[in-house]
Amino acid sequence: MNAAAESIRIALLGNPNCGKTALFNQLTGSRQKVANYAGVTVERKSGRFTAPSGRHFDVLDLPGAYSLDALSPDEAVTRDVCRGMHPDEPRPDALVCVVDATNLRLHLRFVLEVRALGLPMVVAVNMADTAHRRGIRIDLHALSGALGVPVVETIGIRRGGARQLVEVLDRGDIPTPPAVDIPDDLSLHQQVRELIARAVDMPSPTAHVDEALDRVLLHPVAGLLVLVAAMFLIFQAVFAWAAPLQDALAGGVGAAGEWLAALLPEGHLQSLVTDGIFAGVGTVVEFLPQILLLFLFILALEESGYLPRAAFLLDRPMFKAGLSGRSFIPLLSSFACAIPGIMATRSIQDPRDRLATIMVAPLMTCSARLPVYTLLIGAFVPRQEVGGLFNLQGLVLFGLYLAGIASALLVAWIMKRWRRGGEHSLLLELPSYRVPHPRDILIGLWERCWIFLRRVGTIILSLTIVMWALLNFPAPPPGASEPTIEYSLAGQLGQLLEYVFAPIGFNWQISIALVPGMAAREVAVSALATVYALSAPDEEAAAQALQPLIASEWPLATALSLLVWFIYAPQCLSTLAVVRRETGSWRTVAVMAVYLFALAYLASFLTFQITRWITG
Image (cartoon, one colour):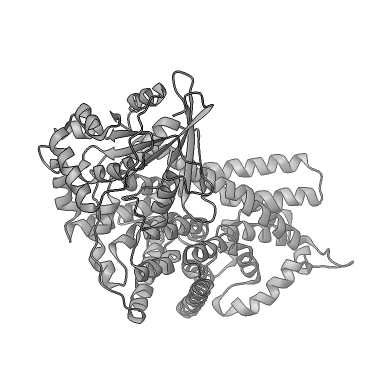
Protein backbone atom coordinates (compact mmCIF):
# COMPACT_ATOMS: atom_id res chain seq x y z
CA MET A 1 0.00 0.00 0.00
CA ASN A 2 1.11 3.53 -0.70
CA ALA A 3 1.21 5.24 2.69
CA ALA A 4 1.65 8.64 1.10
CA ALA A 5 -1.47 8.31 -1.03
CA GLU A 6 -4.03 10.97 -0.40
CA SER A 7 -6.80 8.38 -0.27
CA ILE A 8 -6.23 4.64 0.00
CA ARG A 9 -8.61 2.37 -1.91
CA ILE A 10 -9.66 -0.86 -0.22
CA ALA A 11 -12.21 -3.40 -1.40
CA LEU A 12 -14.34 -5.63 0.82
CA LEU A 13 -15.11 -9.01 -0.70
CA GLY A 14 -16.35 -12.36 0.50
CA ASN A 15 -19.01 -15.04 0.16
CA PRO A 16 -22.67 -14.05 0.46
CA ASN A 17 -23.96 -14.11 4.06
CA CYS A 18 -20.53 -13.39 5.57
CA GLY A 19 -21.65 -10.08 7.14
CA LYS A 20 -19.62 -8.03 4.66
CA THR A 21 -22.27 -5.33 4.24
CA ALA A 22 -22.69 -4.98 8.01
CA LEU A 23 -18.92 -4.47 8.27
CA PHE A 24 -19.08 -1.93 5.43
CA ASN A 25 -21.79 -0.04 7.33
CA GLN A 26 -19.65 -0.21 10.47
CA LEU A 27 -16.71 1.40 8.66
CA THR A 28 -18.48 4.02 6.57
CA GLY A 29 -21.73 4.78 8.44
CA SER A 30 -23.74 7.32 6.47
CA ARG A 31 -20.79 8.27 4.26
CA GLN A 32 -21.74 5.90 1.47
CA LYS A 33 -23.46 5.94 -1.88
CA VAL A 34 -25.08 3.33 -4.09
CA ALA A 35 -25.12 3.22 -7.88
CA ASN A 36 -24.85 0.65 -10.67
CA TYR A 37 -21.78 -0.27 -12.65
CA ALA A 38 -21.91 1.16 -16.16
CA GLY A 39 -23.50 -1.20 -18.68
CA VAL A 40 -24.75 -3.74 -16.11
CA THR A 41 -27.30 -3.84 -13.34
CA VAL A 42 -24.81 -4.91 -10.68
CA GLU A 43 -24.91 -2.65 -7.61
CA ARG A 44 -21.89 -0.55 -6.76
CA LYS A 45 -21.69 0.49 -3.11
CA SER A 46 -18.85 2.73 -1.95
CA GLY A 47 -18.03 4.82 1.11
CA ARG A 48 -15.29 6.60 3.04
CA PHE A 49 -13.79 6.63 6.51
CA THR A 50 -10.87 8.32 8.24
CA ALA A 51 -8.51 6.31 10.47
CA PRO A 52 -7.15 7.68 13.79
CA SER A 53 -3.88 8.68 12.08
CA GLY A 54 -5.79 10.89 9.65
CA ARG A 55 -5.45 8.52 6.69
CA HIS A 56 -8.44 8.59 4.34
CA PHE A 57 -9.81 5.32 2.98
CA ASP A 58 -12.20 4.80 0.06
CA VAL A 59 -14.08 1.55 0.67
CA LEU A 60 -15.70 -0.47 -2.10
CA ASP A 61 -18.23 -3.14 -1.11
CA LEU A 62 -17.91 -5.71 -3.90
CA PRO A 63 -20.78 -8.08 -4.76
CA GLY A 64 -20.78 -11.39 -2.88
CA ALA A 65 -18.94 -14.19 -4.66
CA TYR A 66 -18.25 -17.85 -3.99
CA SER A 67 -15.38 -18.06 -6.46
CA LEU A 68 -13.26 -15.97 -8.81
CA ASP A 69 -14.22 -18.47 -11.50
CA ALA A 70 -17.27 -16.32 -12.23
CA LEU A 71 -20.65 -17.92 -12.92
CA SER A 72 -22.75 -14.75 -12.65
CA PRO A 73 -22.46 -11.01 -13.44
CA ASP A 74 -21.99 -10.32 -9.70
CA GLU A 75 -18.99 -12.62 -9.49
CA ALA A 76 -17.63 -11.29 -12.80
CA VAL A 77 -17.55 -7.73 -11.41
CA THR A 78 -15.77 -8.90 -8.25
CA ARG A 79 -13.22 -10.86 -10.29
CA ASP A 80 -12.55 -8.03 -12.75
CA VAL A 81 -12.13 -5.37 -10.03
CA CYS A 82 -9.70 -7.55 -8.06
CA ARG A 83 -7.65 -8.30 -11.16
CA GLY A 84 -7.61 -4.69 -12.34
CA MET A 85 -9.57 -5.59 -15.48
CA HIS A 86 -12.73 -3.54 -14.85
CA PRO A 87 -13.02 -0.58 -17.25
CA ASP A 88 -14.63 1.79 -14.72
CA GLU A 89 -12.96 0.71 -11.47
CA PRO A 90 -9.21 1.01 -10.78
CA ARG A 91 -7.52 -1.87 -9.03
CA PRO A 92 -7.76 -1.47 -5.22
CA ASP A 93 -4.66 -0.81 -3.13
CA ALA A 94 -5.63 -3.58 -0.72
CA LEU A 95 -8.25 -6.28 -0.27
CA VAL A 96 -10.19 -7.14 2.87
CA CYS A 97 -11.52 -10.67 2.52
CA VAL A 98 -14.40 -11.12 4.98
CA VAL A 99 -15.21 -14.62 6.25
CA ASP A 100 -17.89 -16.01 8.55
CA ALA A 101 -16.21 -17.28 11.72
CA THR A 102 -18.92 -19.95 12.09
CA ASN A 103 -18.46 -21.31 8.55
CA LEU A 104 -14.73 -21.20 7.84
CA ARG A 105 -14.75 -24.51 5.98
CA LEU A 106 -16.63 -22.89 3.10
CA HIS A 107 -15.24 -19.36 3.28
CA LEU A 108 -11.52 -20.18 3.52
CA ARG A 109 -11.67 -21.69 0.04
CA PHE A 110 -12.44 -18.24 -1.35
CA VAL A 111 -9.66 -16.70 0.79
CA LEU A 112 -7.13 -19.00 -0.88
CA GLU A 113 -8.35 -17.96 -4.33
CA VAL A 114 -8.09 -14.26 -3.45
CA ARG A 115 -4.64 -14.69 -1.90
CA ALA A 116 -3.37 -16.12 -5.19
CA LEU A 117 -3.98 -12.72 -6.85
CA GLY A 118 -0.90 -11.31 -5.10
CA LEU A 119 -2.46 -8.11 -3.71
CA PRO A 120 -1.98 -6.65 -0.20
CA MET A 121 -4.63 -8.43 1.80
CA VAL A 122 -6.24 -8.68 5.23
CA VAL A 123 -8.58 -11.48 6.33
CA ALA A 124 -11.43 -10.26 8.57
CA VAL A 125 -12.91 -13.12 10.62
CA ASN A 126 -16.38 -11.67 11.07
CA MET A 127 -19.20 -12.70 13.44
CA ALA A 128 -16.56 -13.52 16.03
CA ASP A 129 -19.08 -13.06 18.85
CA THR A 130 -21.35 -15.76 17.42
CA ALA A 131 -18.38 -18.10 17.07
CA HIS A 132 -17.38 -17.51 20.71
CA ARG A 133 -20.92 -18.32 21.93
CA ARG A 134 -20.82 -21.58 20.01
CA GLY A 135 -17.49 -22.52 21.53
CA ILE A 136 -15.55 -22.15 18.28
CA ARG A 137 -11.94 -21.20 18.97
CA ILE A 138 -9.85 -19.71 16.17
CA ASP A 139 -6.09 -19.29 16.57
CA LEU A 140 -5.70 -16.06 14.63
CA HIS A 141 -1.90 -16.12 14.92
CA ALA A 142 -1.68 -19.64 13.52
CA LEU A 143 -4.14 -18.85 10.73
CA SER A 144 -2.22 -15.68 9.83
CA GLY A 145 1.05 -17.60 9.74
CA ALA A 146 -0.41 -20.29 7.50
CA LEU A 147 -1.94 -17.78 5.09
CA GLY A 148 0.91 -15.27 5.14
CA VAL A 149 -1.46 -12.31 5.61
CA PRO A 150 -2.84 -10.47 8.67
CA VAL A 151 -5.96 -12.03 10.22
CA VAL A 152 -8.18 -9.99 12.56
CA GLU A 153 -11.46 -10.49 14.37
CA THR A 154 -14.42 -8.26 13.54
CA ILE A 155 -18.01 -7.98 14.71
CA GLY A 156 -19.86 -6.09 12.01
CA ILE A 157 -22.99 -5.48 14.09
CA ARG A 158 -21.26 -4.15 17.23
CA ARG A 159 -20.05 -0.61 17.79
CA GLY A 160 -16.25 -0.67 17.60
CA GLY A 161 -16.35 -4.15 16.09
CA ALA A 162 -14.01 -3.12 13.26
CA ARG A 163 -11.34 -1.56 15.50
CA GLN A 164 -8.66 -4.24 14.88
CA LEU A 165 -9.23 -4.06 11.12
CA VAL A 166 -8.87 -0.27 11.10
CA GLU A 167 -5.64 -0.54 13.14
CA VAL A 168 -4.09 -2.98 10.65
CA LEU A 169 -5.13 -0.85 7.66
CA ASP A 170 -3.86 2.30 9.38
CA ARG A 171 -0.37 0.87 9.85
CA GLY A 172 0.04 0.77 6.08
CA ASP A 173 2.46 -2.18 6.05
CA ILE A 174 0.13 -4.96 4.85
CA PRO A 175 2.22 -7.76 3.33
CA THR A 176 1.68 -8.79 -0.28
CA PRO A 177 1.49 -12.56 -0.85
CA PRO A 178 3.10 -13.85 -4.04
CA ALA A 179 0.87 -14.02 -7.11
CA VAL A 180 0.39 -17.63 -8.20
CA ASP A 181 -2.00 -19.62 -10.33
CA ILE A 182 -5.23 -20.42 -8.50
CA PRO A 183 -5.04 -24.07 -7.36
CA ASP A 184 -7.53 -26.60 -8.64
CA ASP A 185 -10.56 -27.57 -6.55
CA LEU A 186 -8.95 -30.65 -5.05
CA SER A 187 -5.89 -28.68 -3.89
CA LEU A 188 -8.08 -25.91 -2.47
CA HIS A 189 -10.16 -28.35 -0.42
CA GLN A 190 -7.00 -30.05 0.86
CA GLN A 191 -5.49 -26.71 1.94
CA VAL A 192 -8.74 -25.72 3.68
CA ARG A 193 -8.72 -28.99 5.67
CA GLU A 194 -5.14 -28.34 6.72
CA LEU A 195 -5.97 -24.76 7.81
CA ILE A 196 -8.99 -25.92 9.82
CA ALA A 197 -6.96 -28.64 11.53
CA ARG A 198 -4.16 -26.19 12.36
CA ALA A 199 -6.07 -23.14 13.57
CA VAL A 200 -9.71 -23.97 14.35
CA ASP A 201 -11.29 -25.89 17.22
CA MET A 202 -14.97 -26.45 16.40
CA PRO A 203 -16.98 -28.45 18.96
CA SER A 204 -20.01 -28.93 16.68
CA PRO A 205 -20.71 -28.07 13.04
CA THR A 206 -23.95 -26.18 13.78
CA ALA A 207 -25.32 -24.23 16.73
CA HIS A 208 -27.92 -25.92 18.94
CA VAL A 209 -30.23 -22.91 18.56
CA ASP A 210 -29.97 -23.13 14.76
CA GLU A 211 -30.78 -26.83 14.88
CA ALA A 212 -33.81 -26.26 17.10
CA LEU A 213 -35.16 -23.47 14.90
CA ASP A 214 -34.52 -25.42 11.71
CA ARG A 215 -36.49 -28.39 13.01
CA VAL A 216 -39.55 -26.11 12.92
CA LEU A 217 -38.81 -23.62 10.16
CA LEU A 218 -37.61 -26.25 7.65
CA HIS A 219 -40.41 -28.71 8.46
CA PRO A 220 -42.50 -29.29 5.29
CA VAL A 221 -45.76 -28.51 7.13
CA ALA A 222 -44.89 -26.39 10.16
CA GLY A 223 -42.36 -24.38 8.16
CA LEU A 224 -44.91 -23.48 5.49
CA LEU A 225 -47.43 -22.45 8.14
CA VAL A 226 -44.85 -20.16 9.76
CA LEU A 227 -43.98 -18.64 6.38
CA VAL A 228 -47.64 -17.97 5.51
CA ALA A 229 -48.24 -16.49 8.97
CA ALA A 230 -45.21 -14.20 8.58
CA MET A 231 -46.40 -12.96 5.18
CA PHE A 232 -49.92 -12.44 6.56
CA LEU A 233 -48.53 -10.41 9.48
CA ILE A 234 -46.58 -8.18 7.09
CA PHE A 235 -49.61 -7.25 5.02
CA GLN A 236 -51.81 -6.70 8.07
CA ALA A 237 -49.17 -4.42 9.55
CA VAL A 238 -48.84 -2.36 6.35
CA PHE A 239 -52.39 -1.11 6.89
CA ALA A 240 -52.89 -1.30 10.65
CA TRP A 241 -49.55 0.08 11.86
CA ALA A 242 -48.91 2.65 9.15
CA ALA A 243 -52.34 4.31 9.33
CA PRO A 244 -51.50 6.86 12.11
CA LEU A 245 -48.27 7.90 10.40
CA GLN A 246 -50.01 8.16 7.05
CA ASP A 247 -52.79 10.33 8.50
CA ALA A 248 -50.25 12.63 10.16
CA LEU A 249 -48.23 12.95 6.94
CA ALA A 250 -51.39 13.63 4.92
CA GLY A 251 -52.36 16.39 7.34
CA GLY A 252 -48.93 17.96 7.11
CA VAL A 253 -48.89 17.88 3.31
CA GLY A 254 -52.39 19.38 3.16
CA ALA A 255 -51.51 22.18 5.60
CA ALA A 256 -48.34 22.99 3.64
CA GLY A 257 -50.33 23.17 0.40
CA GLU A 258 -52.92 25.52 1.89
CA TRP A 259 -50.22 27.75 3.39
CA LEU A 260 -48.33 28.03 0.11
CA ALA A 261 -51.51 28.61 -1.90
CA ALA A 262 -52.40 31.57 0.35
CA LEU A 263 -49.06 33.21 -0.49
CA LEU A 264 -49.50 32.97 -4.25
CA PRO A 265 -51.74 35.14 -6.43
CA GLU A 266 -54.56 33.46 -8.30
CA GLY A 267 -53.57 32.20 -11.72
CA HIS A 268 -51.59 29.47 -13.42
CA LEU A 269 -48.79 29.46 -10.83
CA GLN A 270 -51.19 28.90 -7.93
CA SER A 271 -52.99 26.21 -9.93
CA LEU A 272 -49.69 24.48 -10.72
CA VAL A 273 -48.69 24.42 -7.05
CA THR A 274 -52.05 23.44 -5.55
CA ASP A 275 -53.79 21.43 -8.27
CA GLY A 276 -50.59 20.04 -9.77
CA ILE A 277 -47.71 19.59 -7.34
CA PHE A 278 -49.50 19.28 -3.99
CA ALA A 279 -52.53 17.42 -5.34
CA GLY A 280 -50.30 15.05 -7.32
CA VAL A 281 -46.91 14.64 -5.65
CA GLY A 282 -48.31 15.23 -2.15
CA THR A 283 -50.79 12.40 -2.59
CA VAL A 284 -47.96 9.95 -3.37
CA VAL A 285 -45.75 11.12 -0.47
CA GLU A 286 -48.52 10.23 1.98
CA PHE A 287 -47.93 6.53 1.30
CA LEU A 288 -44.25 6.60 2.35
CA PRO A 289 -44.93 5.05 5.83
CA GLN A 290 -46.51 1.95 4.29
CA ILE A 291 -43.70 1.50 1.80
CA LEU A 292 -41.05 1.81 4.51
CA LEU A 293 -42.93 -0.62 6.75
CA LEU A 294 -42.91 -3.22 3.97
CA PHE A 295 -39.16 -2.69 3.47
CA LEU A 296 -38.62 -2.98 7.24
CA PHE A 297 -40.01 -6.52 7.27
CA ILE A 298 -38.12 -7.59 4.14
CA LEU A 299 -34.81 -6.24 5.50
CA ALA A 300 -35.40 -7.95 8.86
CA LEU A 301 -36.06 -11.30 7.17
CA GLU A 302 -32.94 -10.86 5.05
CA GLU A 303 -30.68 -9.87 7.95
CA SER A 304 -31.93 -12.70 10.19
CA GLY A 305 -30.77 -15.47 7.84
CA TYR A 306 -34.32 -16.71 7.26
CA LEU A 307 -34.60 -16.05 3.52
CA PRO A 308 -32.28 -18.87 2.32
CA ARG A 309 -34.27 -21.28 4.50
CA ALA A 310 -37.54 -20.10 2.99
CA ALA A 311 -36.01 -20.70 -0.46
CA PHE A 312 -35.01 -24.23 0.58
CA LEU A 313 -38.46 -24.88 2.04
CA LEU A 314 -40.25 -23.75 -1.12
CA ASP A 315 -37.98 -25.50 -3.60
CA ARG A 316 -40.24 -28.53 -4.15
CA PRO A 317 -43.57 -26.69 -4.64
CA MET A 318 -41.88 -24.01 -6.76
CA PHE A 319 -40.22 -26.64 -8.93
CA LYS A 320 -43.64 -28.18 -9.64
CA ALA A 321 -44.78 -24.75 -10.81
CA GLY A 322 -41.81 -24.38 -13.16
CA LEU A 323 -39.47 -22.42 -10.90
CA SER A 324 -36.85 -23.36 -8.31
CA GLY A 325 -36.09 -22.54 -4.71
CA ARG A 326 -33.55 -19.99 -5.94
CA SER A 327 -36.46 -18.07 -7.47
CA PHE A 328 -37.87 -17.31 -4.02
CA ILE A 329 -35.44 -14.55 -3.01
CA PRO A 330 -35.73 -12.67 -6.36
CA LEU A 331 -39.52 -12.94 -6.17
CA LEU A 332 -39.60 -11.79 -2.55
CA SER A 333 -37.36 -8.86 -3.51
CA SER A 334 -39.92 -8.03 -6.20
CA PHE A 335 -42.45 -7.30 -3.45
CA ALA A 336 -40.32 -4.24 -2.79
CA CYS A 337 -39.55 -3.51 -6.45
CA ALA A 338 -39.44 -5.74 -9.53
CA ILE A 339 -36.16 -4.16 -10.68
CA PRO A 340 -33.87 -5.54 -7.91
CA GLY A 341 -35.92 -8.76 -8.05
CA ILE A 342 -35.11 -9.21 -11.74
CA MET A 343 -31.48 -8.27 -11.08
CA ALA A 344 -31.33 -10.91 -8.32
CA THR A 345 -32.13 -13.67 -10.84
CA ARG A 346 -28.45 -13.61 -11.77
CA SER A 347 -27.94 -16.15 -8.97
CA ILE A 348 -30.09 -18.67 -10.91
CA GLN A 349 -27.72 -20.65 -13.12
CA ASP A 350 -30.30 -22.57 -15.17
CA PRO A 351 -31.29 -20.28 -18.12
CA ARG A 352 -34.88 -21.61 -18.29
CA ASP A 353 -35.48 -21.08 -14.56
CA ARG A 354 -33.93 -17.62 -14.74
CA LEU A 355 -36.10 -16.56 -17.70
CA ALA A 356 -39.25 -17.92 -16.03
CA THR A 357 -38.45 -15.98 -12.85
CA ILE A 358 -37.84 -12.77 -14.81
CA MET A 359 -41.14 -13.17 -16.68
CA VAL A 360 -43.22 -13.56 -13.50
CA ALA A 361 -41.36 -11.10 -11.25
CA PRO A 362 -43.61 -8.14 -12.29
CA LEU A 363 -46.62 -10.10 -10.98
CA MET A 364 -45.31 -9.77 -7.44
CA THR A 365 -47.03 -6.80 -5.80
CA CYS A 366 -44.27 -4.19 -5.64
CA SER A 367 -44.27 -1.22 -3.26
CA ALA A 368 -45.15 1.13 -6.15
CA ARG A 369 -48.59 -0.50 -6.24
CA LEU A 370 -49.20 0.28 -2.57
CA PRO A 371 -50.33 3.89 -3.16
CA VAL A 372 -52.91 2.65 -5.69
CA TYR A 373 -54.07 -0.23 -3.50
CA THR A 374 -54.22 1.94 -0.40
CA LEU A 375 -56.20 4.64 -2.19
CA LEU A 376 -58.82 2.24 -3.54
CA ILE A 377 -59.05 -0.02 -0.50
CA GLY A 378 -59.36 2.99 1.79
CA ALA A 379 -62.13 4.42 -0.40
CA PHE A 380 -64.22 1.27 -0.94
CA VAL A 381 -63.39 -1.15 1.89
CA PRO A 382 -64.57 -0.14 5.38
CA ARG A 383 -61.98 0.05 8.15
CA GLN A 384 -63.35 -2.61 10.48
CA GLU A 385 -62.18 -5.70 12.35
CA VAL A 386 -62.96 -9.24 11.25
CA GLY A 387 -63.32 -11.80 14.02
CA GLY A 388 -62.10 -9.24 16.52
CA LEU A 389 -58.53 -9.78 15.36
CA PHE A 390 -57.94 -8.97 11.69
CA ASN A 391 -58.26 -5.72 9.79
CA LEU A 392 -60.62 -6.06 6.79
CA GLN A 393 -58.54 -3.67 4.69
CA GLY A 394 -55.44 -5.71 5.50
CA LEU A 395 -57.27 -8.89 4.45
CA VAL A 396 -58.13 -7.36 1.09
CA LEU A 397 -54.52 -6.26 0.60
CA PHE A 398 -53.34 -9.78 1.50
CA GLY A 399 -55.78 -11.14 -1.10
CA LEU A 400 -54.30 -8.90 -3.79
CA TYR A 401 -50.81 -10.16 -2.95
CA LEU A 402 -52.04 -13.76 -3.06
CA ALA A 403 -53.67 -13.13 -6.44
CA GLY A 404 -50.33 -11.93 -7.81
CA ILE A 405 -48.47 -14.92 -6.37
CA ALA A 406 -51.02 -17.42 -7.69
CA SER A 407 -50.92 -15.81 -11.13
CA ALA A 408 -47.10 -15.94 -11.15
CA LEU A 409 -47.12 -19.65 -10.33
CA LEU A 410 -49.72 -20.31 -13.02
CA VAL A 411 -47.73 -18.43 -15.68
CA ALA A 412 -44.53 -20.24 -14.65
CA TRP A 413 -46.36 -23.60 -14.86
CA ILE A 414 -47.56 -22.79 -18.39
CA MET A 415 -44.02 -21.77 -19.39
CA LYS A 416 -42.73 -25.07 -18.02
CA ARG A 417 -45.15 -26.95 -20.29
CA TRP A 418 -43.84 -25.05 -23.32
CA ARG A 419 -40.13 -24.98 -22.48
CA ARG A 420 -39.00 -28.01 -20.60
CA GLY A 421 -35.62 -27.88 -18.87
CA GLY A 422 -33.48 -30.27 -16.89
CA GLU A 423 -34.01 -30.90 -13.20
CA HIS A 424 -31.48 -29.11 -11.02
CA SER A 425 -30.69 -29.80 -7.40
CA LEU A 426 -30.76 -26.82 -5.06
CA LEU A 427 -27.51 -26.08 -3.24
CA LEU A 428 -27.77 -23.24 -0.74
CA GLU A 429 -25.67 -22.05 2.15
CA LEU A 430 -27.82 -21.75 5.27
CA PRO A 431 -26.20 -19.04 7.42
CA SER A 432 -26.51 -18.95 11.18
CA TYR A 433 -29.54 -17.15 12.56
CA ARG A 434 -28.77 -13.70 13.87
CA VAL A 435 -30.68 -10.82 15.38
CA PRO A 436 -30.87 -7.98 12.82
CA HIS A 437 -28.83 -4.99 13.93
CA PRO A 438 -30.84 -1.74 14.16
CA ARG A 439 -28.08 0.27 12.46
CA ASP A 440 -28.09 -1.94 9.35
CA ILE A 441 -31.90 -1.87 9.22
CA LEU A 442 -31.98 1.92 9.56
CA ILE A 443 -29.32 2.38 6.87
CA GLY A 444 -31.31 0.10 4.56
CA LEU A 445 -34.52 2.00 5.27
CA TRP A 446 -32.81 5.34 4.69
CA GLU A 447 -31.49 4.15 1.31
CA ARG A 448 -34.98 3.04 0.25
CA CYS A 449 -36.56 6.23 1.59
CA TRP A 450 -34.09 8.34 -0.35
CA ILE A 451 -34.72 6.32 -3.54
CA PHE A 452 -38.47 6.84 -3.12
CA LEU A 453 -38.13 10.57 -2.43
CA ARG A 454 -35.75 10.92 -5.37
CA ARG A 455 -38.39 9.34 -7.60
CA VAL A 456 -40.97 11.71 -6.15
CA GLY A 457 -38.69 14.68 -6.78
CA THR A 458 -37.73 13.69 -10.33
CA ILE A 459 -39.97 11.27 -12.24
CA ILE A 460 -43.22 11.88 -10.39
CA LEU A 461 -42.77 15.65 -10.06
CA SER A 462 -41.81 16.00 -13.73
CA LEU A 463 -44.73 13.92 -14.97
CA THR A 464 -47.12 15.73 -12.61
CA ILE A 465 -46.10 19.08 -14.08
CA VAL A 466 -46.43 17.69 -17.62
CA MET A 467 -49.86 16.29 -16.73
CA TRP A 468 -50.94 19.65 -15.28
CA ALA A 469 -49.86 21.40 -18.49
CA LEU A 470 -51.70 18.90 -20.70
CA LEU A 471 -54.80 19.34 -18.54
CA ASN A 472 -54.72 23.16 -18.75
CA PHE A 473 -53.75 23.82 -22.37
CA PRO A 474 -55.01 24.76 -24.84
CA ALA A 475 -57.28 27.24 -23.10
CA PRO A 476 -61.04 26.89 -23.63
CA PRO A 477 -62.59 29.01 -26.40
CA PRO A 478 -64.44 32.26 -25.52
CA GLY A 479 -67.84 31.61 -24.00
CA ALA A 480 -67.03 27.98 -23.08
CA SER A 481 -69.26 26.62 -20.33
CA GLU A 482 -67.41 23.40 -19.48
CA PRO A 483 -64.30 23.13 -17.21
CA THR A 484 -60.94 23.87 -18.83
CA ILE A 485 -59.97 20.23 -18.72
CA GLU A 486 -62.70 19.30 -21.22
CA TYR A 487 -60.91 21.31 -23.94
CA SER A 488 -57.33 20.38 -23.03
CA LEU A 489 -55.05 17.92 -24.84
CA ALA A 490 -55.28 15.47 -21.94
CA GLY A 491 -59.06 15.77 -21.86
CA GLN A 492 -59.33 14.99 -25.56
CA LEU A 493 -56.94 12.04 -25.18
CA GLY A 494 -58.96 10.75 -22.24
CA GLN A 495 -62.18 10.88 -24.27
CA LEU A 496 -60.54 8.73 -26.97
CA LEU A 497 -59.05 6.24 -24.51
CA GLU A 498 -62.40 5.88 -22.78
CA TYR A 499 -63.68 3.94 -25.78
CA VAL A 500 -60.88 1.39 -25.24
CA PHE A 501 -61.29 1.11 -21.48
CA ALA A 502 -65.06 1.49 -21.11
CA PRO A 503 -65.64 -2.32 -21.28
CA ILE A 504 -63.55 -2.70 -18.12
CA GLY A 505 -65.27 0.20 -16.34
CA PHE A 506 -62.63 2.95 -16.60
CA ASN A 507 -63.84 6.53 -17.07
CA TRP A 508 -61.85 9.16 -18.95
CA GLN A 509 -60.11 10.37 -15.78
CA ILE A 510 -58.72 6.89 -15.10
CA SER A 511 -57.78 6.47 -18.75
CA ILE A 512 -55.71 9.67 -18.65
CA ALA A 513 -53.97 8.64 -15.40
CA LEU A 514 -52.84 5.31 -16.89
CA VAL A 515 -50.72 7.07 -19.53
CA PRO A 516 -48.18 8.82 -17.23
CA GLY A 517 -48.56 5.84 -14.90
CA MET A 518 -46.54 3.84 -17.45
CA ALA A 519 -43.41 5.62 -16.18
CA ALA A 520 -44.07 4.51 -12.59
CA ARG A 521 -47.19 2.95 -11.11
CA GLU A 522 -47.50 5.41 -8.24
CA VAL A 523 -47.68 8.27 -10.77
CA ALA A 524 -51.22 7.10 -11.55
CA VAL A 525 -52.28 8.29 -8.08
CA SER A 526 -50.76 11.75 -8.54
CA ALA A 527 -52.24 11.94 -12.03
CA LEU A 528 -55.72 11.07 -10.72
CA ALA A 529 -55.38 13.70 -7.99
CA THR A 530 -54.39 16.33 -10.56
CA VAL A 531 -57.17 15.37 -12.97
CA TYR A 532 -59.89 15.51 -10.32
CA ALA A 533 -58.54 18.74 -8.81
CA LEU A 534 -58.74 20.45 -12.20
CA SER A 535 -62.03 18.92 -13.29
CA ALA A 536 -63.90 19.81 -10.09
CA PRO A 537 -66.94 22.05 -10.66
CA ASP A 538 -66.03 24.43 -7.81
CA GLU A 539 -63.27 25.26 -5.34
CA GLU A 540 -64.91 23.33 -2.51
CA ALA A 541 -64.97 20.14 -4.56
CA ALA A 542 -61.40 20.74 -5.73
CA ALA A 543 -60.22 20.96 -2.12
CA GLN A 544 -61.83 17.61 -1.28
CA ALA A 545 -59.41 14.75 -0.75
CA LEU A 546 -59.13 12.24 -3.59
CA GLN A 547 -60.20 9.20 -1.57
CA PRO A 548 -63.72 10.36 -0.57
CA LEU A 549 -64.13 11.92 -4.02
CA ILE A 550 -63.70 8.68 -5.93
CA ALA A 551 -65.72 6.80 -3.30
CA SER A 552 -68.69 9.00 -4.13
CA GLU A 553 -68.23 8.99 -7.92
CA TRP A 554 -67.05 5.49 -8.87
CA PRO A 555 -69.13 2.34 -8.71
CA LEU A 556 -67.65 -0.59 -6.80
CA ALA A 557 -67.19 -2.50 -10.06
CA THR A 558 -64.84 0.20 -11.40
CA ALA A 559 -62.74 0.25 -8.23
CA LEU A 560 -62.35 -3.55 -8.20
CA SER A 561 -61.54 -3.55 -11.91
CA LEU A 562 -58.78 -0.96 -11.39
CA LEU A 563 -57.36 -2.96 -8.47
CA VAL A 564 -57.20 -6.06 -10.67
CA TRP A 565 -55.66 -4.04 -13.52
CA PHE A 566 -52.73 -3.08 -11.32
CA ILE A 567 -52.11 -6.71 -10.32
CA TYR A 568 -51.14 -7.50 -13.90
CA ALA A 569 -50.51 -4.42 -16.06
CA PRO A 570 -46.80 -3.67 -16.69
CA GLN A 571 -47.18 -0.02 -15.64
CA CYS A 572 -43.42 0.50 -15.24
CA LEU A 573 -41.12 1.31 -18.15
CA SER A 574 -38.07 0.97 -15.87
CA THR A 575 -38.91 -2.70 -15.29
CA LEU A 576 -39.15 -3.34 -19.02
CA ALA A 577 -35.82 -1.57 -19.54
CA VAL A 578 -34.13 -3.77 -16.92
CA VAL A 579 -35.58 -6.89 -18.55
CA ARG A 580 -33.98 -5.76 -21.81
CA ARG A 581 -30.61 -5.24 -20.10
CA GLU A 582 -30.75 -8.56 -18.25
CA THR A 583 -31.88 -10.72 -21.18
CA GLY A 584 -30.43 -8.73 -24.09
CA SER A 585 -33.65 -9.39 -25.99
CA TRP A 586 -36.35 -6.99 -27.15
CA ARG A 587 -38.45 -10.03 -28.01
CA THR A 588 -38.59 -11.01 -24.33
CA VAL A 589 -39.66 -7.47 -23.44
CA ALA A 590 -42.39 -7.54 -26.09
CA VAL A 591 -43.67 -10.94 -24.95
CA MET A 592 -43.76 -9.75 -21.31
CA ALA A 593 -45.61 -6.52 -22.14
CA VAL A 594 -48.17 -8.23 -24.39
CA TYR A 595 -49.00 -11.09 -22.01
CA LEU A 596 -49.24 -8.79 -18.96
CA PHE A 597 -51.49 -6.26 -20.72
CA ALA A 598 -53.65 -9.09 -22.07
CA LEU A 599 -53.98 -10.59 -18.58
CA ALA A 600 -54.79 -7.18 -17.11
CA TYR A 601 -57.51 -6.41 -19.64
CA LEU A 602 -59.11 -9.87 -19.45
CA ALA A 603 -59.05 -10.02 -15.63
CA SER A 604 -60.38 -6.45 -15.31
CA PHE A 605 -63.13 -7.14 -17.87
CA LEU A 606 -64.30 -10.23 -15.99
CA THR A 607 -64.08 -8.43 -12.62
CA PHE A 608 -66.06 -5.40 -13.84
CA GLN A 609 -68.77 -7.35 -15.63
CA ILE A 610 -69.27 -9.92 -12.84
CA THR A 611 -69.30 -7.27 -10.09
CA ARG A 612 -71.74 -5.12 -12.05
CA TRP A 613 -74.00 -8.15 -12.56
CA ILE A 614 -73.87 -9.05 -8.84
CA THR A 615 -74.47 -5.49 -7.61
CA GLY A 616 -77.09 -4.73 -10.25
